[in-house]
Length: 298
Picture 1 (cartoon, rainbow, N blue to C red):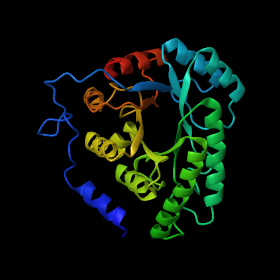
Picture 2: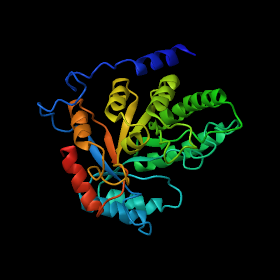
Picture 3: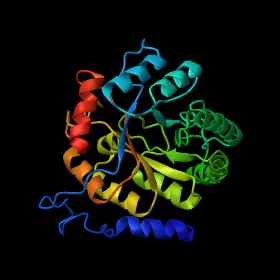
């Protein structure tokens, strides 16, 4: 076990140092103090919230009608990119996230021996699309568990591949943001916990390899959402955050997750990044936008 892994595991099991003025002595958000205004921005994801038959360029129009200024989407294949770019420019919107490896992320990824080059080509192709859209965050998966290869070999391949991918991200001035999924819905996948994503980020040790902290997956798969969020922000691993409630993956406030406290925490620590609304709606996209905006204090 290398020194980086040892240090990370030691830190992960110890009581983390609290961010200045963020939490009270018992580890809860201090309800007696009003946090500062939000420094973060919300971005509507084009996928789950809209009818499947709706063209993506029309979804961008609907994002603008909601009042949002930022959006994201998944894979670029099968979409009319020219029309999407036209609507993005027309409505003066910014794309903040796309999928980083739609061809390889859910299969061979970096876990299957001999598949690294396909992963890197997939990622670089997405970097080129991201540059066209002015997008910074490429949400990336490291692959499914390969039953025919030892776990240790798969982990070594992941670290080595991410280092090479980090250089590609640097070349295009974007960020590879690792998204751990959850063991309830995706038990076949390799990266399912915050600790795994943080460890890969730490051992890759590349400024363009970070983590996407999707609160829907974290609540469903492991809980301990605020503590893990705090650790990831303190260590500088988390670059992008996504929201969605459990159960149902609909707008914040529709389920069990305490988004009031989560947004207060992010305001108190001064998180300045984007927050992707990667979820459906109990009613309409406008309803989801309005509810999330209010909870976020925007």
